[in-house]
Length: 386
Image (cartoon, rainbow, N blue to C red):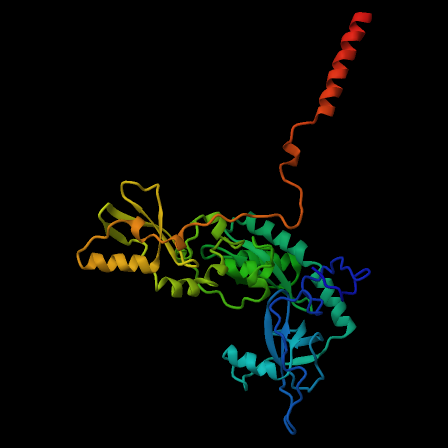
């Protein structure tokens, strides 16, 4: 990924900075928050909020207190306090909007937060990039060690601390894993302190990122901050095919986007009869086959003729149901089916002027047939002359 303002761009065309979201130019950052208060000045006498938001590798964000009063702005590389040593990250948010984010995450404003040590020096940045370059090789070796020990786990990502003294290994597993021996082997082989952190499959997809079936970047790695439970009921209410290959995302779970329009469907279905509705008519019992909430149409078919569907509006269906409650039967579905609810044939045109997809399937023209005939005649004449 890259952006037009990246230093590796040639002629305005990015060739890929390969920083994995650490270039801090906001072109490829994950879960960034737009600072809509940046162009507003503070009232007279009010001090700038002394907490900043710092983003580390991928989507990991933490809050630090700027107790030294450093002039920090979005995009600055800073050295921050860690449990031991220091870490290096980018400032993604500063000012009054950080106060709003703390309230949103239920963090007290006077909480004991770690500190920002300083703006990162060139030496800090060089060391940080050096240890980041080792992550892929160490992740590969760690996976090999886990396979040798027979551990049922998948190490999906490795994150080095800015000073290179510690590495956090993120893994996914179905069951509890005893990785004590693995930590000893990795600490001895890599010469660093090791921390193992288990994450879910959705968090794994959030950290790694990717392109979804819609052609856009994954929502969880770009803007989605919370993971709500998604059930198959969301697909049923939206009348989607219960195909696991289409409903599952890259994490192997149901797609988060199934919940986006669920509330709209539930509100629209309040005016519709249930899908198991049965209509009593003189011609027989009719069952609901399909519902279209956008057009307000329901399709019914008789028990004896399930292949023939009749489209009725929701008002007509409620009218027949009211007759059935009075222990009366409607005449037939054809009497209630209005012309307004009949399926209209839509003629599609090609405004772009693209060629037909079947242009290669056309038979060859006369010219080609004449060539074949001439070739055959020449062969025959050549045979007679010989």
